[in-house]
Image (tube, rainbow, N blue to C red; front, side, top):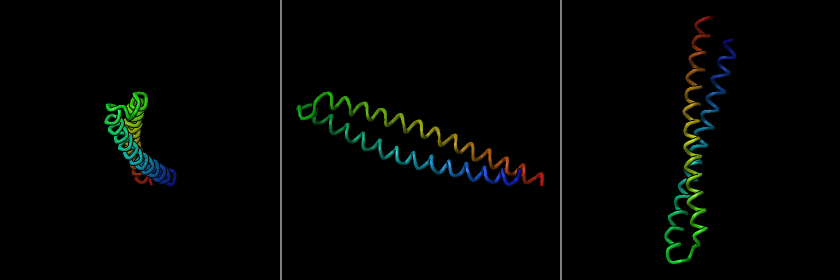
Length: 96
């Protein structure tokens, strides 16, 4: 039980690290989508960019923001999983 508890902590810590890296990537993606949207908004007014291109940029920025929010929630879940695994490890250690 003790070995399994240690392995679970390691697995959950790896999952947390991966989730945090995903959030970092999502943040960069959202920043780029927001830049694209701002640029397209500026260029739509004089007619250099079509309304459809602008609408696609709005959608892309919104989707990127939603992905970031989802992945931030997954980080919170991963943090909770690590805490639970660590508590289980302490319980297993106390039984030895």
